[in-house]
Length: 145
Image 1: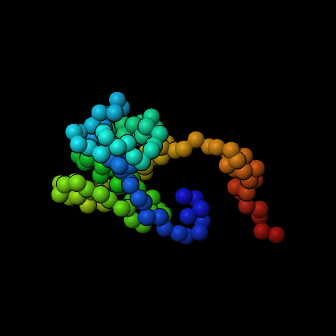
Image 2 (image 1 turned 135 degrees about the vertical axis):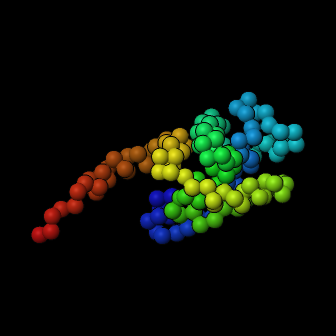
Image 3 (image 1 turned 60 degrees about the vertical axis):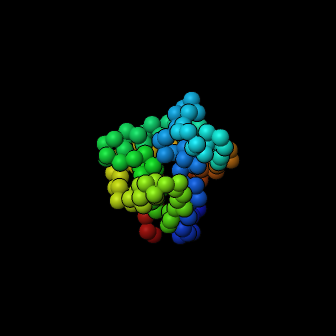
């Protein structure tokens, strides 16, 4: 997302709930509701350990806000500066209503930081090396001459 921010571009998010995985209806052991998509068709592929760590934090936040995990997931995306829209999918009118209410859920800076921390991708080469080499660019600016 840093490139999108730098270039002032927007992002429309496809599969914001990762095929239902981020809705909170699945357990780490792979169990979910009968007939749920991921029970029979595990797509899109994701790092499930990290996904369930994220779901755990979203469950805590959802309890505090009296919201659903899916609403927290969608609200979190909508709090990102580059996200302009999310493409939602719902099997039932209830899911649709729940998803459409997500923009009404406001997340605090602390909640956003918790979600960022638990979901952040590990630094990979060459990204971490480029960041280290460019560190001097983020020092305090030189005084005007």
